[in-house]
Length: 392
View 1 (cartoon, rainbow, N blue to C red):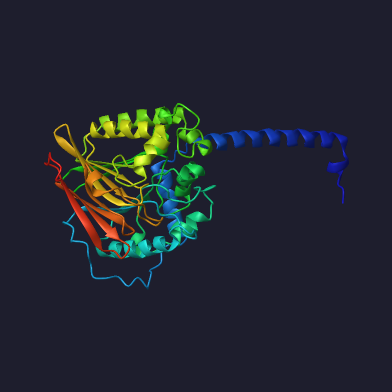
View 2 (view 1 turned 45 degrees about the horizontal axis):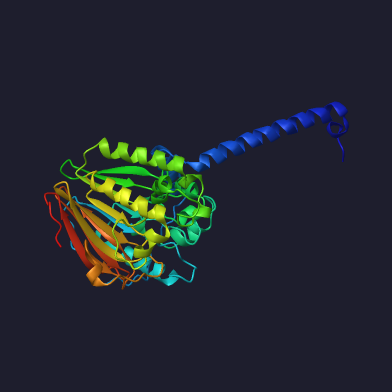
């Protein structure tokens, strides 16, 4: 069974040189892959081609027959309006902290999607509890996403953002999954999507990585949530790059509507939020800085998850308003609220249902509907482009 290649001393030396060459190539490839994983950047053309390829293989959609949708609860949207949903803190299927709630919300969002046909869906982070994903081949992508939100009406682009639990795993694997799915569309940890409106206006969606933005504000080894588990993707260098990008993006265009999607709240009346800034000082410093920046950057709406409640707050600044929507109610167990007398800038807060938000944008109005797990509207708020006051 031994051939002459194995027994020849000369060929043995050649074999060793080839093995060493293969070893060094392998090391170089490992270095390249490691470098890429610290900041995955995928082009939209890469994503488009990958989505087409998956669809040609059959895709992942199938109609869900047992939805038992109630009568349509969402008001009819104006003709030509841009409609999209937002889902936060949802990836808990199989865990003991909201598994059934995630499945209930999936039925509700499917019913609502059948009713108004959203153009796309955004996620608000904490996509995969408890510790994010390990790679783009992680079984959770199928178990907690593809198999759950499989109705035909949900086969639209999904634009994810990252949460702190996602940072406990490989955050860049969530970007790389864009090349394996026919709807997951996340070119990197932070990115922009611009959607045209009917009368020539534009809806700008800015997706930020809250945990990365926080990195520059850390001054000790224990002033951040999950600090010992955070890697380079949440470090100071990445944070500085992210902030520079955010300044550039918000100063280089003038859209009709500017919406920023990030994981954590800037204003919240959840009971735990009162303690977070004290427990995690870097988070408190980041929250103040991000809010100051957002209010000075002509942002109309900030949408976040993290606090597992439904909330709307509003601030007046620079002759306009910025609204803040919290919708971390996609599956994980809900949080308590602070007493009503402590609600200073908050217009609405509720912690009695799981669900998602539906958003409808025209050139004049940006409407948010809070939807429960049965696809019913629980609260609505209209933002008018010409409004300069909060409707307290």
